[in-house]
Image 1: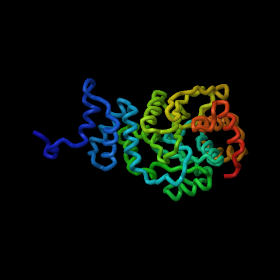
Image 2 (image 1 turned 45 degrees about the vertical axis):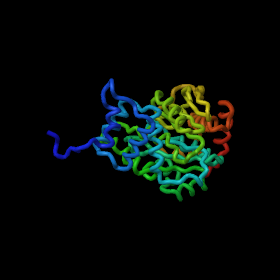
Image 3 (image 1 turned 90 degrees about the vertical axis):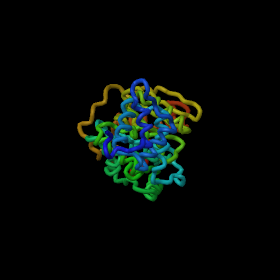
Length: 334
């Protein structure tokens, strides 16, 4: 006998769960349109909690395909609280991981680009993993502000050519799904989807992964979404920050061209883990009061990737040379 509260008719979301979870022989991935429809229903609160938990876990276990990610990105874009059309952003920078072993130097790299006239919009999720520092922490240490709304972003761009907005303000519906990690114990597919969402509609999008198998997934999903230019690489701690002691494969899109390039290591040896993430060092590095050759290699290497794949440098050596000029010629006072 059915449970008294059981529905008499199949729920509209049930086919999406069934497609993913019907077993090793009958289950299948979602199409791009199905993924868009499914996540749109989630954001519209048209899904029961048990369905949402099953949906997220099934996607996570099988690993999301490019078509699924592209469809979910399309659904996410309808939830953003901003209108980027007036901003004319050059670089959309995803910062969704946080740092646990090294300082978040990627923030200084983005600021240097902004001060050089290359406008950067950074977005990310925060406080999803204990023991990490996030972009907002770095901005506080630098005496800068985190953007909460449209007006904040415009003010930050005017002042610094750089603006950062956390998911909490950028998309409350996405944040609500991200918060389920504390209940499910699993990373949400939105960790990947959000990185590729390009809320600023910039012609160049930068992201990074923790696990190399996701590199081609990011590249292919971006191609399905019609992203003109993008770059993705295995960054430090999952952030778009170069690890100069290692060689680095960067996958990219240049309009119709999808490719990859190998960047050589920039410094010898193995970089030691920071004993403590003293964020006051960010200010000292920016002002030049503290000189650190390895940190400088991180910054120049990261800036170079942006310059190379946003179409501002024709080769890796040219990108590195330009990046050194961007960093060395930064204004020392923010």
